[in-house]
Structures are given as structure tokens and as C-alpha cells.
Image (cartoon, rainbow, N blue to C red; front, side, top):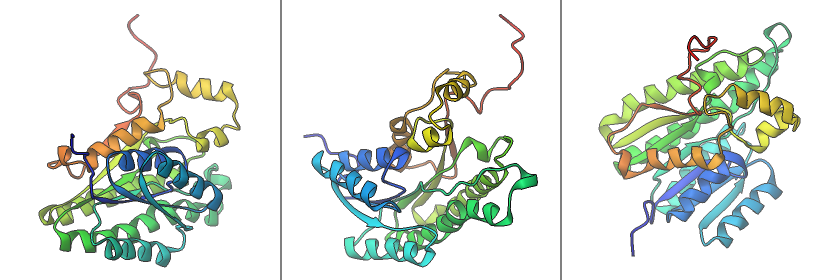
Length: 261
């Protein structure tokens, strides 16, 4: 029998109850890992865990609001101690507050940073303490194309994601000689419950978003999860400090009217 890529490994996925987080947790569990998922919504979280178990995966679930920074740091440390190892931390959860700069309150601005930056920092710090002592491990941050390109009404979210990107690069350099890798995936427009909620389920808006993507479609959560699993795997053992777009070509495109038909 072929050995699974993450057999006997321990993985934490934040925001693991839906969308990219759930697809990622399912992928790791399918590949043999014990997966720890956390999210705020208790019913949705336990539903996700049940689905993973029913598919034959090993999973535990913790209801946690990641603005509880001490709680998140404790979850990472306690998981590592209880399991005797920690191989992967996926910082996927985010809090989003949109708004034009002229109308964006300071509180809303700060909320964009509360999970994307602050929780990523404390969770990564806790994970790196254990991984560096262990001599192996990987942290993967789920960012956004908004962290690289500007959009109206997205100043807070974009700034937070840009900060997340650079934090990951700094972390990668700090621990590169300790056997630990830190990388980032950059999803574009992905068909998730969060995107559906943001558009109000308006198919005309979704169609407009997709028409601006070179591949002319939204991505699937499983496609982002596949990139995360690759970066976490031994196949990516010499890859650290990268920002991998999973966006149907959007970041590669110079958006000007076509010159050639």
C-alpha cells in the first residue's frame, strides 16, 4: 500500500469549518494526518468534523474565536504537547471589514488586523517554538490577491493581508536554518460561502468577478487546498518564503484593453 503523504503527522487548520479551511482539513485527513480544526461557529465546526470522520479521517475540533489570542496560542502549544509533535499550522481564518477609507472607522480598520495579523503572529510564534525544537515543520498562511493589488473599499483588508505576506517572509528567513519552512498561498476569487455572502448571492456580481479572471471562472476551495498540501509536503522541502498565487492568472495580468485580437 502506498504511504500517504501526511501519515502520522499533526496539522492545525484555523477557520476549518467551511470554504478553503474545510477543504484543506479534508485534504490533510485524507492523506493520513490527524487534523485539529478551530472556528467560531460551533454547529458548523462540529458538522465539519463529523464529515471528516465519516470519510475515515482523524480530526478534533475546538470552538475558538481567534481574537482570543491567548486561547489560540494555548491551542497550538497544547496540541503540540498532547500529540508529541506539530507538523503543520495553516493560518486560514480572517475577519473582514470592508469600506471606503473616508467612511472606515478606526475600529473596523483594526478588526481587519485582529485575526489576519495578530492571530497569525501569536499562532506562528507558538508553533515555531515547538517546530524549531523538533527540527521540522511548516507554517502556511492563506492570504489574498488583495494583499498585492489595490481595490476600492478594501484598504483595511488589503493592508492586513500585505502585512501577513511580509510577516511570513520574515518568519521564513528567521527559521530557515532550523528545518522549518514558512510559505504563503495567495487565493484569488474562490467560490466559498464567504464570497457568496459578500456578493449577497447575486449571480450578476459573481459573473462580473469571473469575467475579470483570465481563466474566466472562480477557483474551487479544493484547488487552494491542493496548493497548501503541496507546500506542506516533503515534495516542497526546499521551498520557503514564497507567495504562491492560486488565482486563475489574475496577478499575472496587466489589466489593459487587448491590443491584439
